[in-house]
Image 1: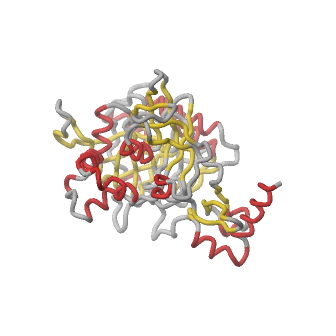
Image 2: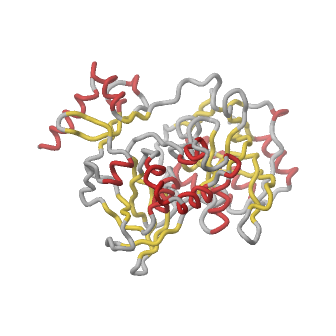
Image 3: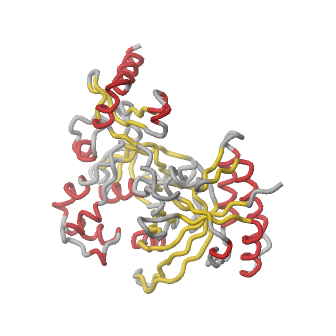
Length: 406
């Protein structure tokens, strides 16, 4: 009964005249402002890119299968928006099945191009600002060492969603708030923002209420686990656990890389995840301040397999793409035109070369906002960590869907 009263008070906090005040005080996830042009612009055939796959279609059928599994879980009336056009779940399914059947034939570059031009509509992401450029970054599945009990060596907790964290869907109060949510907690009879990273790390008011899943030995590793959104942990008892994003504290994501650039501590030309790690390892007195600059905090759950993306299907290295789910059709087939790193034997990037491949939209991320951002999943291992840590390349992103027909 007490929980019901709390929920009622929480609803009162955001209903009616008090809604705007609550929205300014609590973490708000809102739709993007209307863009100057649609996020996806349908192209004339003369403007289609030159289609080919730099991976030779390896693992593409598996990734398409994961998107198809997601589509099967949706209700029949679900639709997908491509710019100003809308397609049914059935049509989206046929689009992926037809493409999967094609790649089983191992088409030549010319056959591939002809097939797409004959059967598919192609849309281009409107990208950033006045250009159609998309910034491609990368992410990976980190591997950590952990313990189910805290020790002197393993003392940094990985949390599941705390029981006092509340997320409110504002569309339940009015359709004009469609897509808007508030994340926070109850303080007495007031709904307030949830604890930020500094407060959680210092336990300043924050009580995990038994939400500790396990403990890891390095807080920098823990931070980047949260940035990546999933990970694999080898426990001291020999057990292996897969961690998957469960929820966040609703605070906005702020880049510590940008902070270190702005402070003149790492040159922009040298910025990478590896460079941040090196800086923090050699300046331990700054770790709290630098990590605390990002108020966003991620809570995890243990899953039987991984890594899983936003669609709750397994991500495919080199094929799964994280995009803004508010502007792009999730599970959709895309074609990326950007660059990828080549790594030498010492783990350094020897060169950047063309990356032209088909990808599936299967994930999202706190820093992936708008039509000008995309995050490529590299998998796990040494190459994945190096490539993902350095990937910051402009390019173009296209979406493919079957032409409407009988």
